[in-house]
Image (cartoon, rainbow, N blue to C red):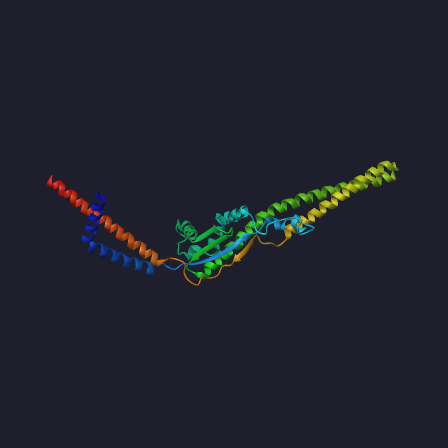
Length: 299
């Protein structure tokens, strides 16, 4: 019963304040329309969707496998490959590089002589930059900008830069393997040379055939090891020099046809409802204050 009385009281207050509620709500709605239309610029969104490639695809074992069914591999990368690319995409190096390349401090109208200009530029760029993993395991990178062509150019170049950084990380380990096998080949060549010279000396000195057979056997084994190491070295060098991309783009960026934000209608509706709610609360508080003040006077 008390709740019913409260509801009736609320309706009475709203009815009493109806003119003020309507006036303020209409004024706020008109002001919101004017502000969103004249002071909120359009932003256009450009997006690139891609899958990371499987790094194993360029490994020596895959490139030089004897049959297609010898090694079973996935064409696209794993969750760890997705995480690595998302990490690269959000590094300060990538963000700062894009800010410098496209002169975003000027583009966003920040005074470069001001202390906070760099910070504000980065903050604004990050508010218009998104890197997410989709529900299908792909990576989606988006950029919003008032210039639709610039948005498309930036997101395309971001993906290219991420690809280059990711490729450099993968090649770094492969180059270490190449250097390791270069050293092994050099050691094996030195051993073969040493054994060859020893056999030549032994033959000149008339060494027993049993000793020569042992040395010949060692030389044969050393030559075989040398050839195997050379083969592996060549294969690893081929793997390093293979031109490859670490991303498979499924949707390229293009200049947007229509703006993506702001959604002015939702902003106007939200602000208007907020103003109405605020005025109702103000009316209730004012009426209750009057009621309490009246009781205090009567007491």
